[in-house]
Length: 276
Ligand SMILES: [Zn+2]
Ligand SMILES: [Zn+2]
Image 1: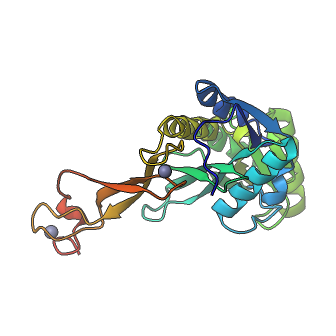
Image 2: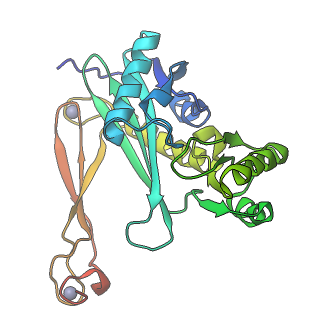
């Protein structure tokens, strides 16, 4: 594997949704210019569901990053990918997963940052009366957060990226006239959802911090946390819990890893013995 021990002066970002606004500044601080590749990222899947995502989040992000790099003739491509849905453990709460990938098309070297947003602006409501839209709109912060309007979950959105009240009212009226109900959803595209853009900015900060950290063994940029190891002992009985006991930091260029043990004990609430 060819190792690049210095950072490139320019990298490509594949986006149609203005993500460069959030990702460029932290990279600029490292002397890296972010160049936007004009590629059709929607073909890798859309939030509105009119194009299904092919493969996993990582595969979709990697494909976008590679295409961006190839389009601009640069070695490194970046792409971000998000997934939003119901919280797996807490009823009625939404959860967002965001990923930012740095992919070197020459070496295959990848740096991946992920982040969980437990307060995403991700919501939906079905209405049968136009007046019922108001509570939803104020809850999601319309019009800063845009909405999509569709007649039913299974059909194409009648309108996407709606930030104007008149457009919204027309789309709702159209849906009510055809099916008697309208499904309103937060538009999850980054430029339509300020909360999502903010989270992507946080990810970019983390990526920059990591790029500024060279591997102690091979000097490649991007040394940082790769994963957690569960097994933090319970405070009451000492049994291993599912809580993180150590973090593995490493380099994805040469494979070198170090383990950093976390101090402390787990709350018995997380213990399989004390709180089965
Ligand atoms: Zn216990
Ligand atoms: Zn290394």
